[in-house]
Image (cartoon, rainbow, N blue to C red):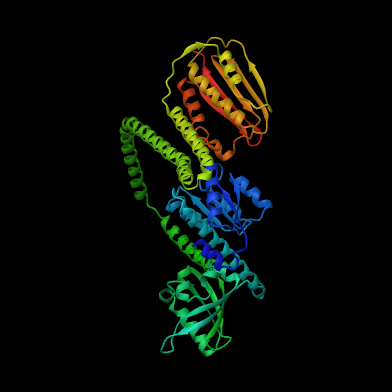
Amino acid sequence: MVHALIEDDPLAENSIRVLLVDDEPSQMELTKLNLEQADPAFTIALAPTPADALKHLSDQTIDCIVSDFVMPGMNGIQLCAEVKKTKTIPFIIYTARGSEEVASAAFAIGVDDYVKKEPNLAHYKVLARRIRHAVEKSWAENRFKSSEDKYHILFSNMLDGFAYCKMIYDKEGKPEGFIYLEVNDAFEKLTGLKREEVIGKKVSEAIPGIRKGNPEVIETYGRVASTGHPETFELFFKPLRMWLSISAYSPKDGYFVAIFDNITQRKKAESVMSATNKELTETNAGLQVSNIELAMAREDVQEHANRLEGLVANGEAKLHDSEERLRRLEQMDTISRIGATVAHDLRGPLVAISQAAEMAKAKQELSDKMLGLISNNAERSLQMIEAFREGTREVRVVKKKVDLSSLVKEVVETMPRPGNVTLDMHLGKRLSDVSVDPDLIRRVLDNLVRNSVEAMPDGGRLAVSARRDGEDVVVEVSDTGIGVKEEDKKHLFEPLFTTKRGGVGLGLYFVRMAVDAHGGAVSFESKFDEGTTFTVRLPTS
């Protein structure tokens, strides 16, 4: 039980400072409330985005980070990697989107624990125990490391690997292995084995396969430890797949010290030189090709060319069928991605509704607060469903003669705009008789103008223009907002791609589909932290 842990541990009176990172406000509030009830020692700070978490860490002391996995801009594993560059804080991934692949990637990057979100309230006690365990383990490791630092300075700067070991003998007095008592930093660098993975362990545990792969190593070290005579030798160490140059001596009976260097590169260079000489000899022999062999080669080339012409003719007939199958596969892939996204995005608010309802039943004094959470998350779920429905509807164009100037002006003037965003609108001549689908183009303009306004949270300039260009009309929507990162540009018109918190990722996908359906084109130019300009070109008839 958590309370027993707190009472038995000498560190129980210390406050444990936890930073909770989650882009779901309701889930974050529920998690904070339940963790504080599960362990009174917890002091919990909240960060709705990874950027907020990094800012908090820059000026506050934290004992443990608990982070969601799926978040806009940077996921939990990427946040852990960023934190571990400068901090040794325990990091726990806490997510509803659990899988073996995600867990494997998390532990590989340095995540200390991985806990899956559950609908029931009991799992918060499990999470609280895991947090306390991670923090207390970190505190103990820090105390232990401090006491060892002075000792390691004596040999940590050696360039060669160093290992001090105790031999193990069988009943007949024959060497059967050894135990690592100490190693230096160069040992880790040269072998790739971490100090904590070998100290106090038998060599057969630290390096499985050594008895079968290199039995002569144990025999040599046993001989040095028992006779006291030093020995130097080179060998290919099979378990670590490297060449080693080793010098061994015995400071006292039954013990030995091994000082070694990785000479793999030297051995490879020697091997490359030998292989190069052999290859040169074989190349010279291979250059003696007869005229008959060349003639036969030409005949083979001609035969293959004739066969290729037949394959091309046959391939052109099959190309149309292949393209049609590819189109259907792409449709199925999009449907699958939409379904997965809907399931993931709706799970957050639905789990929050379930947990809030359970807490409202259990604690009457929280019922008003929980009913507010339920209402907010229900409304959010309905908005998500409507956004998906609108974004995935088939685009059908019904053209009419419209006044494009009036249409642009109507969209811009009815769009909510903060007071710190100024408007610059220029509408050219000969725009009163343009053949487009007014409903589709209104949605296109609405998406582009809304995105520009939302890209300027700190204010800026919104510029909208429309003009004739030959047989086309050109509409441009510009802003001085946050711009688009280089790595995001190629994905901007893809379905379900979004960089906005709570975004669905279907707005710009719809823009492209609607403009394409008109026989037009949409493009953009953007510089990060400077702004973005979208250009829509449409035929006038």
